[in-house]
Amino acid sequence: MDGEKELWMYLEGVKWVEEVYLNFDVPYKTAEIEFVKRNIKRLEQELKIGKERVAYRNMYTKELMLYFGKSSRSIYSAVRKLKRSIPDAVLLVKKKTIVSAEGVKWIEQNVYKEKYIENLYDYKRLLQEIKRGLWQEEY
Image 1: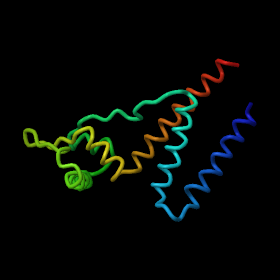
Image 2: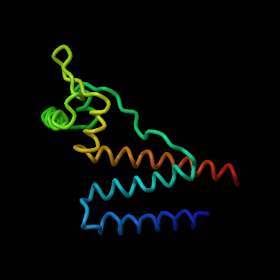
Image 3: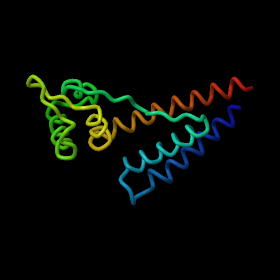
Image 4: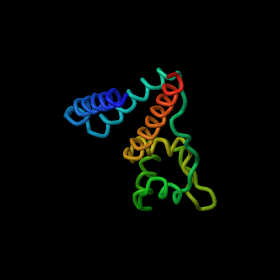
C-alpha cells in the first residue's frame, strides 16, 4: 500500500516538474493553475463529483484585505482593474465599496493568483481525501 502511494506521489511530482517548472513557454502561475485544474478534473470524474470549488460572496474592501492578506492600497488597485473589466461588479453603498461575488472571483483569478492556486490545492486535497476514504471503505 505505502509503496503505491509513494509511487503515485512521485509520478505526480515528476509530471509537475515537466509541465510547470520546466515549461518556459507559459508563465509559472498559469502553468501551475492548469496543472492543478487537470488533476482536479480527473479526480472529479473518478469520484463523479462536479461542483463549484469555492463559494464566493460579496465583500467590502476590508474583507477583501483579510481574505487576500493584502494592504488597502493593493486591494484598491485590484478593484480599479476589476472596474475596467467588469464595471457592474463594484458598488458604492453608504460610502463603502462592495465587490460582488463575481468580482471577488475575478480578482482572485486575475490579480491574486496565489490565493486561487491555494484554493485549488485545498480542493484537490479534499478530493484526494474523499478518494482515499472511498478506497479504504471498499477494501
